[in-house]
Image (tube, rainbow, N blue to C red; front, side):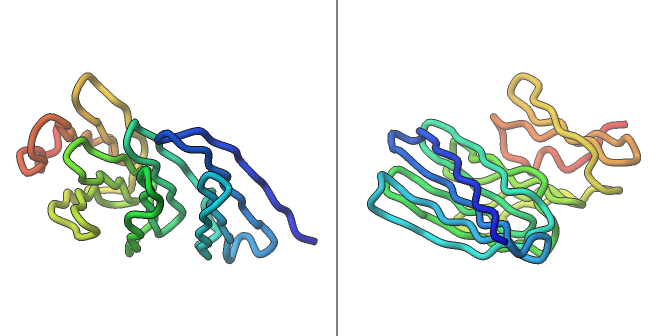
Length: 159
């Protein structure tokens, strides 16, 4: 038996449908993204984590356990595979992505890691504080990423 879940979404000035085919979960998850009922993309994703979504005025991100897909007003602009589980992803104002993984935080530009912060333990939580993202690992160590500045200044955890 196949389970099909569809999520309609209005984002980035378009109508989207995110369809998830869950027949092979937890091994894999098939995702079909439809833009304005005219364009369609399909991905086979690792199925051990649910599909997650982030939306801003200019981008929509979808991520699964190991992949981040970025969509702009004209459709798919990037697909990025990672070597550890993705917890959160968000587009930055500078056409970059901030990806919070199980044991690291990565800033990506054009699909490539340009900066990285390694957590001392596994990811526990994240919160938004003014112009910063504060990530806490399982040891209770906080890592602050200033969204208004270059993340190279943020490589040091605070106790």
